[in-house]
Image (cartoon, rainbow, N blue to C red; front, side, top):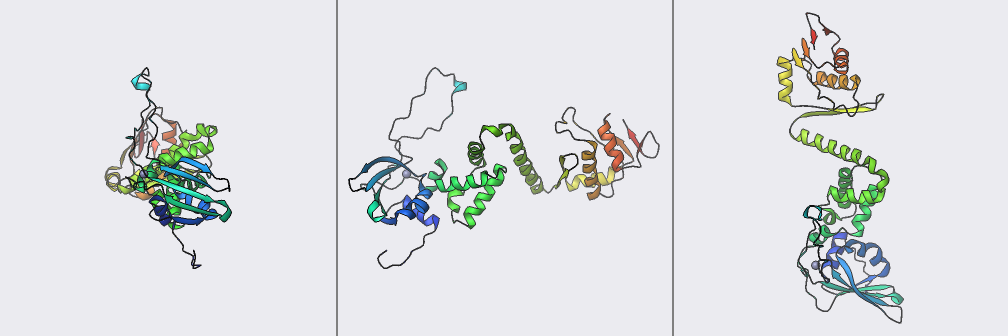
Length: 316
Ligand SMILES: [Zn+2]
């Protein structure tokens, strides 16, 4: 800048400037490489380039939505069920192009619209959906390396992008699936045996938030000595029923679903939580399966109940 005035652009402003080139921009090589191009690297794809004798060079980039090559034709002998479903973009839907001139001697980059090419036929957000920028991918990778569930990574990335990097627009509709894919690439197939667990964790978090939205009481607990955990949820209407009719309590577990090896301690803890939120629950009779785990957990929480006794009974 000739008058030594330093102009600060936000990331979203930089993105807008490089998306729709109106006037020729001049940016220092270092700034361009580090803080401008990574923001829009997803929008543009190299079209052609030229190296000059003095060390300078230029590259022409075309919008990723421009399809300058015919898409590969589908092999006809593949059965319909085995075919990949692919989004087929209509050919040549956007013709925007830019020219990036690298003036190595001056350590400057000049960016201009290429040969009066037209504006984009779509929004910048559409480009972001097609492919995420290097800046966003780096951000996701920084979080993904910490190896927590994709849903939580999406949340952290969005918060950080919004609050610290004014990059909110680029991550606006970042999807859990996209993050999961990046995460998978990062941690690789070594952890495929854990993928189920990662999914389970995010499924649990989603379930809890859904239940809470539906006004359920919901509590997650952990039994450290057994390394087991559980979720207790109850709707206020159900608790009212338990209060009124809990003298006859039916406890039922689904056969052969104890995959997570829940012990009576784990079930007892769940019963204690329920008792804690429904203090008037006084079971006189408990109908249950012929299961030691159930029986032991009930005895732990309601020591007054004994099988076969008249006053309060466990009925098998
Ligand atoms: Zn375009």
